[in-house]
Length: 339
Image 1 (cartoon, rainbow, N blue to C red):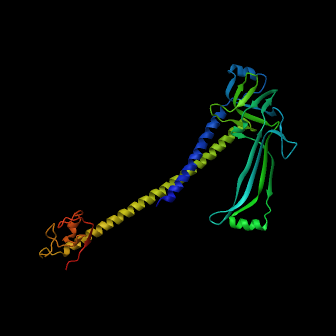
Image 2 (image 1 turned 60 degrees about the vertical axis):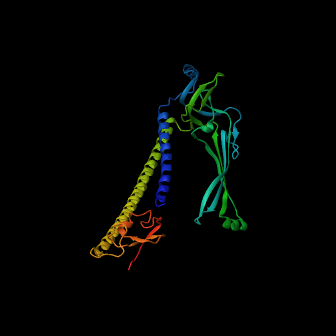
Image 3 (image 1 turned 180 degrees about the vertical axis):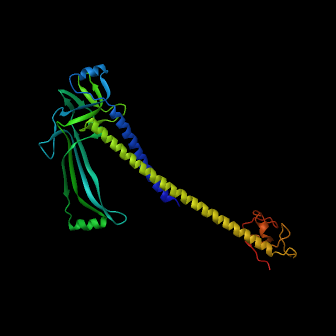
């Protein structure tokens, strides 16, 4: 219990550190992979390139315009906007009272819906269909609408919110879309199907899958910046962990030193007391009641529950089980004053 604060701080710091290290090495690996990824041009030569590669390229980058395969999705907030992926999210913004009595803003997602139709990336008359776009690590979409509808509370809402510690501020509705015609970079596995179609899909070896409006060079810079930021946070967490561990070690050493000093002080007081008692004993005096063990020092200790006063203080330290007179078990020993 003496180190509970340090243990909690180290636990939280360790979780954050491990998370940052995982992200750091993940971004580092992704940046290395992206930097060596070949770029394939979408043109009439693509079929021949895939034929020479056994109809599959494990990891490549292509760039083209988004083209729906079928009827595109029409925006719910702007009928002039169409696309292939639609994301609708509804959030509730509230003010809550914490256990300390302070009010703070918070939000929670009430509903989130994704609508997707088949689409591909087109360039120079060649279309590559994109498979499972929602699993992409980066999926850039345009925000079509982001509106906040504030709640107008009544008097009863104010009273109820005061006692419940929960007040609604409003509802936020956000719509995002991947628009038709957006030029995007797709990085993943390219496959040539038997029906003559091309498909870009998530790599089967677990490498990252990207659908982004950025070119490969910009994506690489973003990954490097993200890697550096996680590295800085990991270094800060490491420094904090070292400081907290140092505080805990110093606290432990101080406690150990204090206990050792108290023990030494206790031993010193006990030795001083014994020395003083030995000095006041007169070796020339023949005591009527002498210790049953050493036969020289006066009796000074009473044994309970038998009640025999038969030991001096020196010999009483070694007698812990049975009384030397009646052989009954010893529960406690106390100082006896014999006049």
